[in-house]
Length: 395
Image 1 (cartoon, one colour):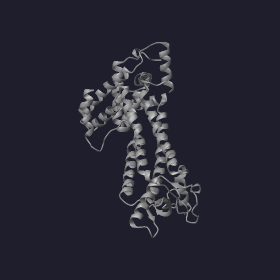
Image 2 (cartoon, one colour):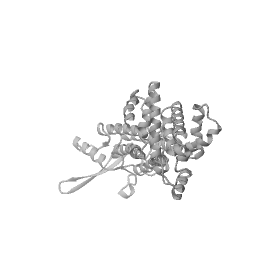
Image 3 (spheres, rainbow, N blue to C red):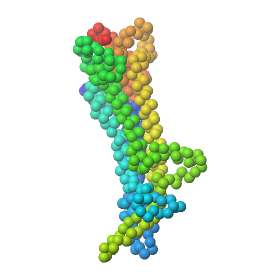
């Protein structure tokens, strides 16, 4: 790994062209989404704790200090919403629409940012256990893409030898009947997975994809509990109101004007109850933020589900072979039908699912020319150093 460490600085050729061990949809989740939610959290925090998040209409006899107290007590306690054309309820049982979320909006948004980032930490922590340093390999290849031809050739040769050692070290060298059956099952379906079966990385990657999907959908359920029932369809309601020409900004979920009940204890243990009307200007911003969040969660969940399906499609044996043969035909002029059988063994018994998965990640983070050169170099290395009969787990 010494050469990998030496070549790693090549990735800094351009500060704005960093390489990753994931794809664009993953970065939409763990980078862009996290950044968006952090920015939203900072903006809302600033508006809440720098300005006046609530202003209450106090009785005329209230002094300035009483008005300040009223604003503070109504901010830390729950206000409730009653439409202007309805009477104020006389008891708490009829006050069914309490607004209890606005104090916690910044914290919730920061938590959502963490939820988006968490799956990437699991991926980065566990993928290194495969023995294939995906992040460094992809980064080094991406850096060599902009280097001199000599550095590029040297990097590709080393990447090929490095991948060869990693792929060979993960092989199952037991030759018993059960070992062969397990290898066959792992090769043809997804019931068995692990480093010895050549599918540890791809199965881990798909599991992380499922975490991203669960996070996107789960946050819709979380916000439904946080903001109140009906948030699942909030975006549809807004679009429907806009289509019908209704005022979509008058939502009871984000009311601008609420009521606040509080009690003041006076001398003689007398309790004075007050009901005041309060303005929540912060909800003007909260409403727009949560409309955006709804559409973003729906978009990111849909995009991740589609991306997951596409990655599942790549697992089929025929698709794996076609992917490798496509590059061999482009880069290897002498590739013919006579090479189909060796190329099948090259895909199924040598590269296996994890090897092809790493090549796909390189393709998504560099370009087809670089991937073609790596596949061609691995093909030549395979034909020169490995005979199919020596691969002990052929089935």
